[in-house]
Length: 192
Image (cartoon, rainbow, N blue to C red):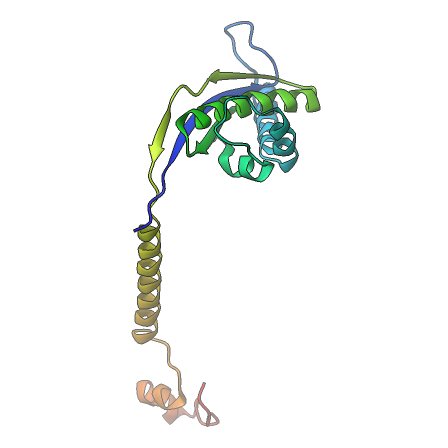
């Protein structure tokens, strides 16, 4: 059984069109605009351009040097549905690397996107302080895929076997002899 685990760290930030200064909140148009802006920030954060730029500014103290492809595989941003919140997740073989990469990239990508778009307000309100170990077992994934394929094949076979579809003229004549009497099947000589 091949098992290789990683440490996973998470940081959270939000994006809005305007900075809230009072308690009344955002209006409907501001909510829609903030939602679209958060989607734009997400697209930039997950873009190859951003990873290529970020790899030149990685924090010191990492256990290894990262290429932009490795950084792209290690750090991801995702959108929390129906919010303006972006969740950044970093995976690394070293706990400290996961935390540093997550905190660095969440701040770096939002700051760079703000400079590119020149609109909106962002804030990383929850930085990564710890990283949890997540084990990976490839044997369970393979067994799950094989079991899923076997179930699919079984369902397809049972669907075919117990189908009420009539597949030949003979079966049609057996099932509905009155149609043959009326001449409705008279000209059919081939299998359907």
